[in-house]
Length: 178
Figure 1 (cartoon, rainbow, N blue to C red):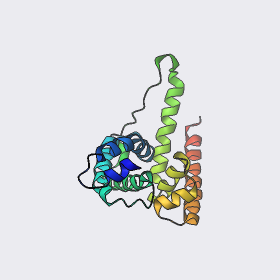
Figure 2: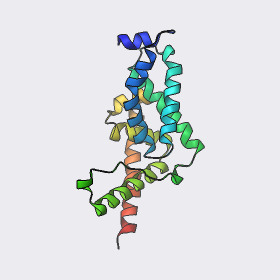
Figure 3: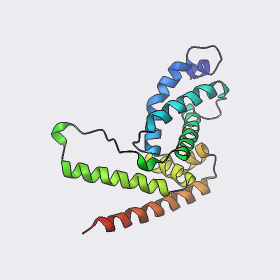
């Protein structure tokens, strides 16, 4: 917390250390939100720039993670509006050579691609709630604070997102069966 207080004061050199500490979480959040796309690195960089600009205004009303997450999701949302994700090619980190099973790897890649396509069909609010609650494992109450929504709204949006994704993923499963 001392590092954060010093980083939020103008003229202090600890801002870089704070941003460096946030980078792995920020990248993980945005990877889950955007999926593995060519857009990811640019959005991470833009989010870091926005966080660095906003850090002097951080009052400590929330955790630094919540503060950074709000900014990152705003930046990612703008980037998604500017560029279509459908053209992005999935780039998955390959498993160790001795654990590669080409059929399961192809099935996993196909399933992941379908999940991100299904996530693209959700509204911004449903997608944000789903990513926070299901992928980041935040409680609906925590997600409501991050997104500045009522907890009942978060629960409702989460239910709708689950239903929509379930239908979309089930439809896809039926289409791919012989």
